Length: 565
Image 1: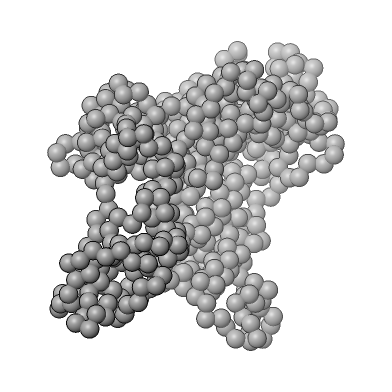
Image 2: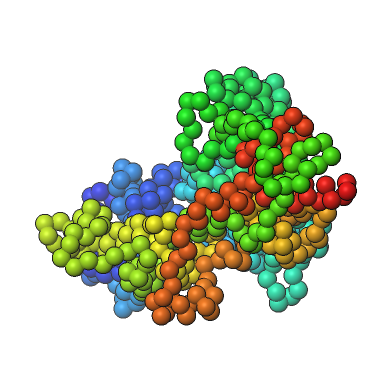
């Protein structure tokens, strides 16, 4: 074998045995070009030479093209006599490759750093992002036993590794000792990361600027494991972050804006006599701003002040000692009409998220499209104008159905999203939407329901049943039980069993017989009866208003008066 120095641009050779018929992606070529420009080509291309002096390339075609692109004048190549193994060498050089372990790559980077290589120079030479170099160098902050496990190939997910590397070594050691696996078991990285997690507030949620940052002494750390284009700066000094947000908010309130405080359990507390608005606010409405103490983000809520109604002496309640009428609670279902509406909206959003998953199989997609024809809000007409012509026109050009499978798939998902709805209105799809959601695992997309907005729609019995499953004992008052459930579920997702997509046996049988119709939209009387029953004000001069309604508070008031009696 002979080493020759040639000008790659003028080198003449034959290329008859290239096993790579599909070119590498541009990103890989750019990485090779950058690495070669920084440190040169490490391994020379290999050629075979016939008796007449003709050269045939065996391996290193991309390296040759890279040298020409970098305008290299002198380039080393290896030349050998032709033999029957040349074709196998060409294939093996592309196949038999093993990537380095992340731990080995980290050790190599640390070795380069001790040789005075900067992170930028290392990244350029290895053709990897500087961000990846910084991420790997965080392994220096990982406890040795955890690092040894990672080196064995048991690599945690990026967000778990981020949490582990951010914690002090002594805390890592304690978490590993408490959660390290047995010999044949895998590591529960979730448990280790959960034991080491710390509260963080991110710069992307900050409204304040540099002035407030300096005034409150906030120092940003960078989350190197976050997506590259995302502002990943954060601070663990949550008190300073919240104070800076408050200072900015006080200085930047709009004309109709007002700062509202939080209730005991972290939810926004509207002013007395205020009614929350779920639709677009008008010019007369107010915007309340508050700071989410969990994330630090500034959030808003629209409300309007309601007029006080005359004393409701004919409400049918019992009089208290001060002469005010006490509204007696009425019998309630487990979930109010408003609660069912909220569940319908949650299900619809979860279903549409699940439909957007890229791993949705073609068979499943076809099955869902056929299923959608049986939805309550779909009418199949013959000879009429298809209701989705505008949507499907995107995949029909010149009267011909496109052959672009990706486009057809995208339109199919849009059609399903436009058709399948779990809402309790005229556009609800009924049980067909729930069957679809169950088929694609949309339960995983449902949001937590242990919130101040949703839990008041549960009856006392339903609330206590939910709490019992979470290890929360019933309290003396409904609002105390609700608060305990919210506190217990602060770091977890709680989904009411009745809100899951799966059908009961009775519903499934009814759907199969074609007899089931989705419940009609609850009328206003039902919601008013259970969700807006009114509550006595702390001020004896005030009268009950719909704005202060809370169905569970009725039980509280009744208990208080019963205790007083």
